[in-house]
Image 1 (cartoon, rainbow, N blue to C red):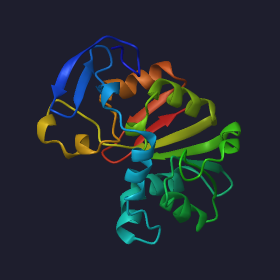
Image 2: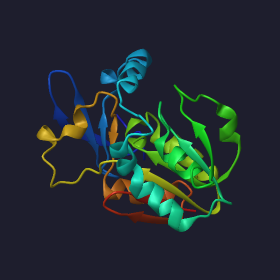
Image 3: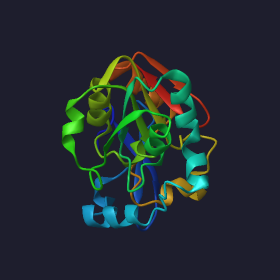
Image 4: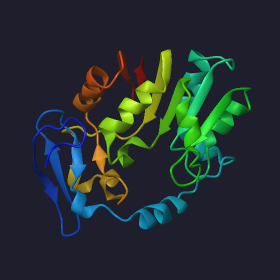
Length: 208
């Protein structure tokens, strides 16, 4: 199959009885073969098991690399979008308490597509990009939703050769279909409408 991000050729990477992943020879992305995608109904049920209580201090700490950076980079006069916010948009809630205006979008829980017709100064994409079935389209559209000088803040677990994929917990979530490498992120920056990229240990920032 072609890579669902860069359309490069792929090769066999890892397989078990229930799942099979291939590796892109161009961008290095690791992707699940479509034959192993779960149904939309099963995917929604899986998301409903997430403990996304916006008042949970552990959850607030988990998203803090993103919210802290936004509080540094933008003021409450700037507009934001929490893309793929899930059942409990904790990042948006934290920022709203500081006076920020945050639009919410999630295909299952906040399916208001009208918010995708606007542009924003910053976009939050926390533990979402690994779920993209069409990452090329989604990142391109996210870039279009950013104002000039805007930033896309992402959080995901990046794959590298130092990781033992066989024992990597992140691959075990059946809703995770694409794992990014530093090379994949550079490809996104260079080809899908962004001008800058910063890969920090706990947050990835694309700039426009």
